[in-house]
Length: 509
Image (cartoon, one colour):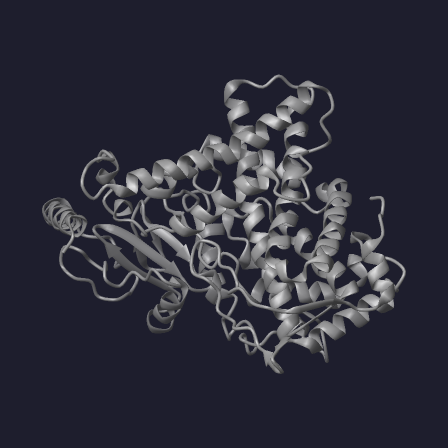
């Protein structure tokens, strides 16, 4: 047994015994029972029950066994899982004044530096300023109209990259997502190849997806370990966190400094940062809020749209009939002589439904985190102050009581047909709840739609044939804070000579 394992076990046993004894001596009787859940062990509680790989699947099983609200505790920490939109809305929307906090996450939040981003901010004045800034610039679809030309231009550039090197699809999607968010947030136009800011963001997002999920490190359950020096045996996580924090800080500071220099020189294009600096002299606190508001949109918006757009190409590879229906609609409405634009969106209901199904079919953020700021009795259950609240968004988007045959990819579920009402809009759940609803949801929704519409207009996507054998991609989304489809191969070709010419055009946006 390694020194690290021995030390971790010693810390765990000592801390668990301390927590258990304190609770036995000082804890008063609860005013109501906890929600039901798997039975825990003395001292450590449900430490062995907490899943680390695709936890939404385990949470789904708890939902089937215990109901919409289930509960576990680990070393005195209470965790409540919500398995329905109804329970999430009743708690996180209707009681948002007390259910909008975030737990302190020692590893990714405090040590890696993400506590400065909106996703990790405790509920309070600074959090409200972050959201106010984001809502002012990107708060609704109408506010995004000024940025539509940028999104259309970058989507067109994406088509050119894919046509030239279709085997690098995932890299093209990531490059385009970063280009859109960098341009909208900072007024920065990315280089076609090896852009330094795109590379910084890629590194930051990779480390977040790998090390960010709560519970990956013991320090999340035993916060006092954060005080252990790097040189101490078994404290390698401190060195890792320091290296990650340097990248986090660099990813927030570098584009922000670029935008400020452009503003000072009087040459800054319209962007999130330039709008917030307009006709104002900012205090140090206001500058901090602008810097990390932009960084939050940048980091959050880049990776989520990458996952959704990659899911789109996976779906088109697997479901050619859906692709043909969407292309037929675009051909009829837009015609062969131009690319689709946002002006066409209201006239392309099947493409709109297809975008919704992409968001439902592969939950980009399968689980989100809230925390409660005071004791609460909900639906007869006791929810203690400080409890971690985990809405299982994956199951909400795959609940058979909400969606007919949820494992089936079927955009028509969102269209009124034969007297039947459309099924529930997945955007009701997939962007979160309450006062922690994703502030960039309209930007993400627009980016996914324009990528899908333009790609369908000019490309045929199909399975790859290798050595005479057709390769069917596997549907296996990754675990982590942001879930991505498993890398896959597909064939992407221009639909026609006219489509080829449209992609190559130098269009002015």
